[in-house]
Amino acid sequence: MNGRAFKLGTFSKNGGKPFAAIVLDDNAIGIAEAAKAAGKPAPAGATIQDMLDDWDRSFAQLQEIAAALPKGTPDAAPVASLTALPPVGRPGKMFYAAQNFQEHVDEMLRAGMTPKEGPKFTGEKSTSKPYLFLKAPSCLAGATDDIEIPRELKRIDWEAEIACAINKRGKRIKAERALDHIAGWMTTNDVSARDLQIRADRPGLRSDWLNGKSHDRFAPMGPYLVPRAFVKDHMNLFLRLTVNGAVKQNGNTSQFIFTPEEQIEYASGILSLETGDIFVCGTCGGVGQGTNTFLNVGDVMETEVEGLGKMRNRFVAEA
Image (cartoon, rainbow, N blue to C red; front, side, top):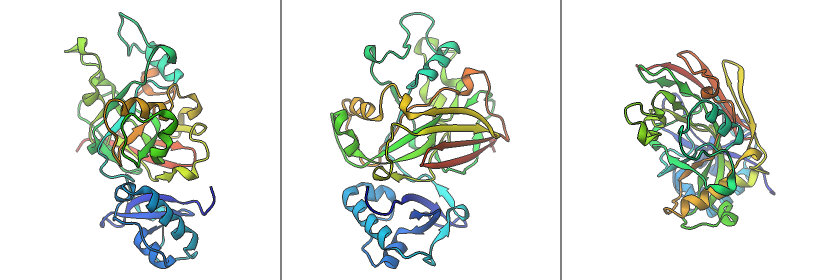
């Protein structure tokens, strides 16, 4: 990709109003200020979500701004001095892929997170389709936010994942055209309450996705949205997660069973995708459920996807 590579983010400063920013060399500058400093028109809309509505035009304008922006712009601030918010603040839908790495399939089978009777999914792609569930967009959190452990829950788990943001509405999108609908990629984590994921009072219904996945701040995301043009190969990026500095997950997106493109084809065959929708594409092996090891108050979870940025979230007691 020709041109100066940049990232996008949504930030606030000292508790102030959120603003969309272009990020160059770990420095963020509000997009309106960056456009003014570069002498270029700013994309329409105040948020990244607004830009997704007309992404082709917005991305071209952002490229022009990044290329013309002088170094040392006074309005720029180190990202570390800002509060990172979810890059896309109010997605309409958030799709999550269940058991989409072979190692994760295997560890969940060993942990008994599959029915004891009937056929079991063992990772064989030819006999299955993507398995997606929805997570509430209201449980988004920023890349450095604290995450409260809900009262009385003891089995809070981690799942390092890569996410993509949809930039173009579509229905029945073929996998070979799916990348045309992706604006960019983000680091995220599907925090999970294993206590509640399978309901003891309703075992015949199996997984309770709402109760197990959609507690407040159980979807930290960011700090950046990296435009697709600047991600050389989304199918060859490391996923890494540590808890208190100890490596728990260390995988690669090359290990996907179903690719993000195949997930988009599957989901768009059910319902229309809208700009700002998010796909979270599956976690690698090493989740806590596999070793019966879970998060506690005071633990620090760091989640990183190669080239997309690192999150650092501390777990605290529910207020």
